[in-house]
Length: 161
Image 1 (cartoon, rainbow, N blue to C red):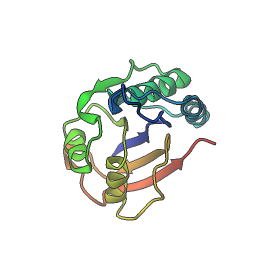
Image 2 (cartoon, helix red, strand yellow):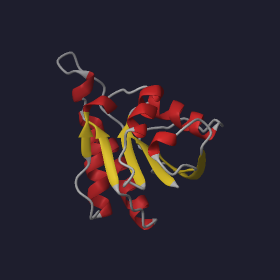
Image 3 (cartoon, rainbow, N blue to C red):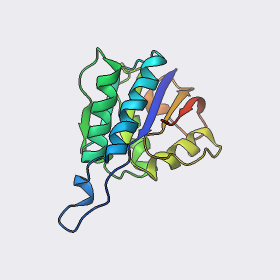
Image 4 (tube, rainbow, N blue to C red):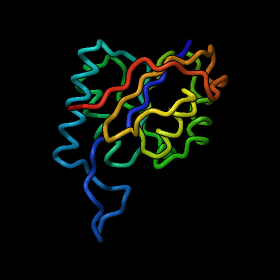
């Protein structure tokens, strides 16, 4: 069985006229959220094989902050440009292509794609994934290519305080 953790990036600043959506940084509160999520996951003895993150500034900052808090023995998060504002169907394709040596993958990306994917995998609605929410899923599959709607069981649904 595979495990998948999906994390929405922490709260980001509103875009300015001179700044693209892609370059939006975390707010001070967003930085706090990412730190708190890292601590919460560390308290749960959270471990994973590989973390993937959108290359958008807000997702990358969230991933690096959480990864640092976990004192992970794995390498730095892998930056994936395709995860920027990715749709649920594209997320399925991304996951299908993961190396089967990865038993537990973490993906840090954006809504609405993450929420749609979670709801489709669980076949039940979860409350919206507010900024920095982490959803841990157990997938009833042996290989990533087998991922399909309804194959998941919810392990945890955490939002930082």
